[in-house]
Length: 315
Ligand code: MEV
Image (cartoon, rainbow, N blue to C red):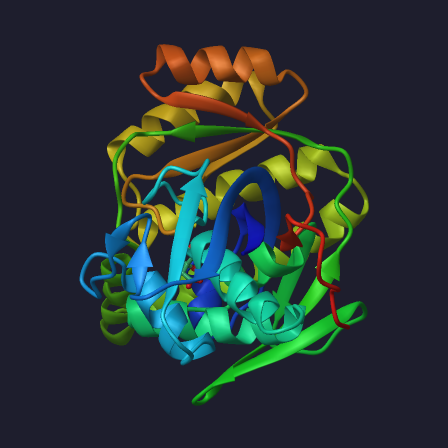
């Protein structure tokens, strides 16, 4: 048996715009999904026969990264599904990693590419942000140009993304989960439809791309005030792309008095928001009082990891 775990993520800046080839900045968080793979007589997931309809990401991961004799896959998750915290990326990355490790060793670049292809297939249209963050861990900068600290490049049709390591300073974030399950695919498709018909939406996407670049500088300078202002602006721009939700606005507003800034994170439409603060407990209380589920998270954690220690990580 081979077991791998992979972290969830929070997108600090750039969700949705990154699907159009703009930049993004994302951080791995200390909520993980663990997947174990072992030889079996038939394909099964958590003890049940595998069904494409129920196990979309795992079944697509098998198509992309396995193609061998039947295996059983067991998963366990600390990440609520549809919460905007990267559960589909983490299940995909941990499964693809475990399948590769079963065959001899994990190679982060290959795992990131295959996992992106899985998400793109299941979601209909995706960027490699979530899957590359879950693979590399720590922080990543996604950019149309190749920068310093380059890790790998992912191409899909006309679109391409360069993935870079981003050093993460000590920052305190609190997640506010609305409890509202949101599917990424339809939200991504909705933004594409809006961008095809509205120049205002195109301008919002362009501005998000600029916010990301300013955010990367603010991150390098550990400038929390600037980061907070940019988070607030990014939230407003995402609302203009119609991926907000009144519950997200409620949690964001509740956090403002005790945080540098707050925004929705991930696909939106429900899911989660994040706030940057020096006082995580005050923010957690504000989120709870506003009806959300607070999660105080650590950021910049390790990416894909073998849990049974028996295999090497190829470079
Ligand atoms: C979802 O976590 C992030 C989106 O930008 C979609 C993607 O990048 O594939 C909304």
